[in-house]
Image: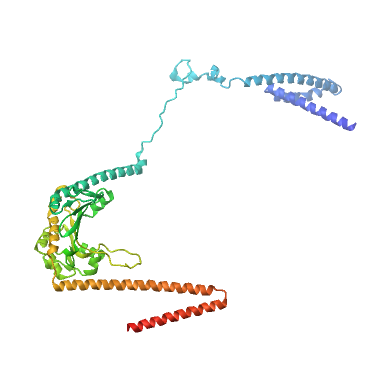
Length: 483
């Protein structure tokens, strides 16, 4: 029973608190000054209840009961009114939230605040400007790309112009020398496919190199002409040529018949080329190790003579050759005459050559074209005497014969070179054989050490010792026979 009463009291207490909270909320929503009214009521009640004339002490319970009933009735009415207000609020929330823009009272006084519009009642119009997309015109940000594009364009233009100019120079050289070559060779411009007498012309090896093969002449098997122009199609090469001058060159190599040329090696070149040829060419480095001045032969001082035999130098440098060299001292790079011509040295990595290089009697010439890199097609005609010198040298070598002493000296030099070569190859073969034997011994010792059976290992060691003793005995016998 006590628990039931307690629960009932709690429920009544909660209901009374709820009713009082609802009353307070309704009053505060309906009247902003509700809080102040409550304070007024509380301020007036003590004076009313404290009056002794009204008998406030005896009538107070009745007034409290009547006030409670009146408060309950008022609370019920307020709850109904509050529910109606909630419905109105719900309806208001569904209205357009931008409706206040259409209310004229919201913008009251706006027209008067804008003196420029005067008394017009029209609403202001908002105009959105059509701003174009900003494109940067600051070209400084692209200077790398612009430089690259300009470099590519300049390189392409230089390639086309340089290629065209080299082609014109090659055609100009052929036109200037074609009649001379055709009068001395039966075929000019043989490419291996053309018919005799047709003349295939220049062969283009690269953008700056052209070749011409001529054949069908006495005393020689053929003549190869190489036109080596500057790399005008390469912009880097052009810039380097501006810093350090260079010249276009014509290299001519005539392969002589073996019976038409005597045995000697000779070279006339300027000092710079002479040093390079003595280092790179096999025959010059072998037979002509010393360089001598060409002044004793009546030539300019910047030339050097490399000759195997002094008689050969006197035979080659006759009056006509000296006259042409003195007339064109800047154009003659070198004149190389050799019966042991084998080209540049072969670069072999840690290996000695097993046989002597194949040699052929050859006349090699190198001439600079005039202009020092500024060659014009009209200047090619001026070097025609140099081609005539080449043909003269071909006929000259057929008639040039060494004396008996010179020929014996040349033969001794060749025998000496062969002996040196045989010694080098023999030493190389002996070293290879020794290395092979050492490797064989090492493998045999490893096989003996890896053997697990001690008896078998002992027998293998005895067998190996007998083999070594036999080999040493054979070596002693060979040494005795040699003595």
